[in-house]
Length: 343
Image (cartoon, rainbow, N blue to C red):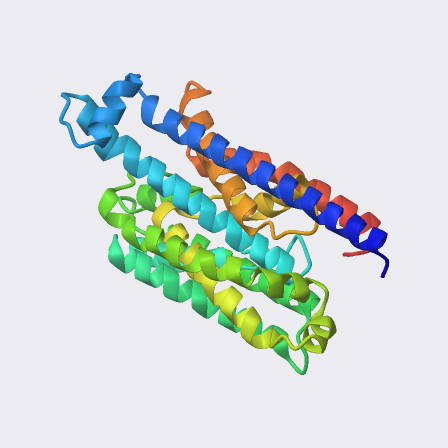
């Protein structure tokens, strides 16, 4: 290879790296601005100095309760749940080489939701029990889908179809549980199913925060192997990548984050579906878009929550706003894939 070719490759890589840094920095700045808006805005708009003083531990009448009890937990839940949904959804889409292969579509979120609704409606429990059941059900669902899709050889198409079928069954189970549930339990179940940051409390957030801080670096560290898996099973094996082990590590990390995030906020619609494609379009090829996808998830959740709170006369849960944003994209994607013969 000539020196001019090496220079051309090096220049291209540097250009792509600068683009990655710019996009990641811009998304981080946008996430920071949205976080500030979450703390500042509400029935009462507090000045920035008062917010800073409250966060520093000073007690201010009215402001301390609004910021520490209502707005800060809401912000942290949206921030970390958005990052979890974004990076996990991108991981599934990249690993399985299909934009439809995300937790919302292939039934993983439905598994967590069914367990949570069962705990709320039938067992009439909340808090830690709902979270634990949601996590266990999410892991059990993905294990079942993976085992059924494995067969003699792993098939992406088979996994997606099995996942869609399991999702349909779990959604039917959720509907049945809602039909037989007591009336006093249904509002909590419906509010949870819609995906909402309302009622977030600080003591519920440590599992979500820890899962993102511990497992997101695992996904980022496996980013090179994830890129190789995107090329296909044979390409991964030919360069010495243990495809099954890498896939299991990525799946477990992603599912645990999704299950915990779902337990805290409910299944916020389409965030895991939208974050990856948006990040990929912004970053381009050549570098992992795991972190940008997580930041896109943060921006989607926080922006949708602000829109749901302040853009209409009636306040809407964040999941309704993200659903309105995501549904047209899903229809567009299905039409495009059908034209390409991918369905």
